Image 1 (spheres, helix red, strand yellow):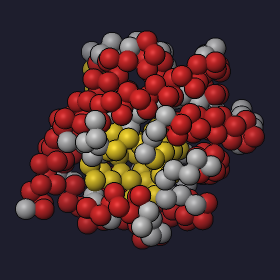
Image 2 (cartoon, rainbow, N blue to C red):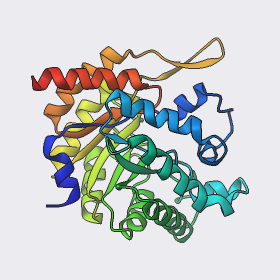
Image 3 (cartoon, rainbow, N blue to C red):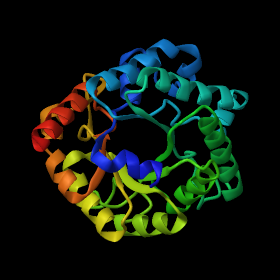
Image 4 (cartoon, rainbow, N blue to C red):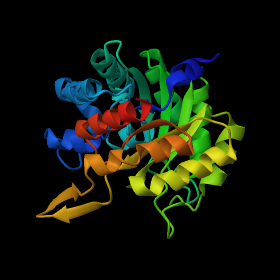
Length: 292
């Protein structure tokens, strides 16, 4: 039995919520790469991770979403890649203190392969360097998340698999009338088939839309391949009120979709942009009620 199989013996597992919006609430300035806070403000980063553990998250992520060589290199921070990624894992592991697993986050490069903004070789090298640092720091698994391009997802997966850790690949379905396509036009069926064939240990959906759109996507991912499904929805779509970005979905409305997601085959359920520890507490309460 694999490590992932053992973890999922009592699935669905509750993961954590948003990191970026939580760090912004703690003073992260617009335009600042959040991952740099692993070195400059580790106490604030750890407070986010610890809040999710205390809320009941069984899996928490790391503040490493943008800590790849392409993004950091453009910001003149390429020499800090290893330190930023290792610190991200170490911070989350301190917060987890044996109560939660730590899955290290790997986001997209932010560049488009199809237009030549980044070459496949450069992307693969960037993902490989990040994955190696995250694995060396002791992550339990790697999460490639918020992908829109299947080819970029495959490159990140290829790089992550070299570590020997379980690898989840999650896409943002934020386009189309029913919010069931990625920005690049990929459907849940396409994603599931391609990621299974490429050797992913689990496949999923995160960001992009509110929780009400994710039940359908989850069903379609699960119907297409036998892999565990990772689900992390936003707290609705962002709105600008009084110059600030807000999310209108309540924790209770969000958690009310947990039973449907579990029935649809979700193995992991958590939140993305705009969600908070209260959303995780609501999910835990709903899960407890469903299992009672």
